[in-house]
Image (cartoon, rainbow, N blue to C red; front, side, top):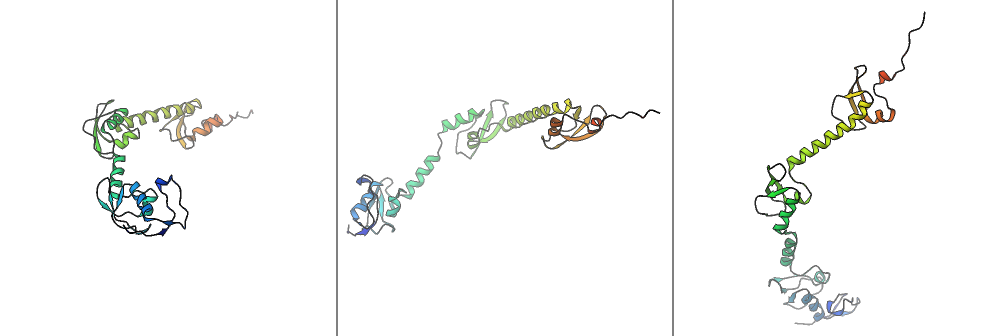
Length: 222
């Protein structure tokens, strides 16, 4: 292999991780050492830090053309092995995937494929056959039907809890609870009038029906 002197700052793993100062002539053998440390065997003379360098990947055997500066910065030399490693990192152990789904109350009825593929499962709560995904199980989401029922039950609880304050002020709600700051249609149990007020106002003032809250007047004596 021909020798070509190049001025560069380069990290050489065999050199204890030291940085060679800018202006030092980089020996091609030192550049090759960087490539070999990353599993690349140079097949051509060193072309320069920013040029593609013909090498053979020691892992897969393919001929690849990484840049010395990219390998030096830790980006790896073989794009093929890099993609394979990335896919392997995303791959999930099927047994672990099943455990995740069981953790949210779903029993898989078919083998695991990928994170975002549909997955037929049986709900351990209601017994329904549902279609879910592993990525949804990771988010803690189980049977959609049971989820809707739990949401409805939570809303019913919120309505009843909010309605207690209105009834304490003599108002009977005529519609579902809209929120503490929104007007809520109610009927006054004393005068029968329909009123619109907010739960927040009723709690802060302790008053319900505006008409009934007005002071009573007595007829003038003749």
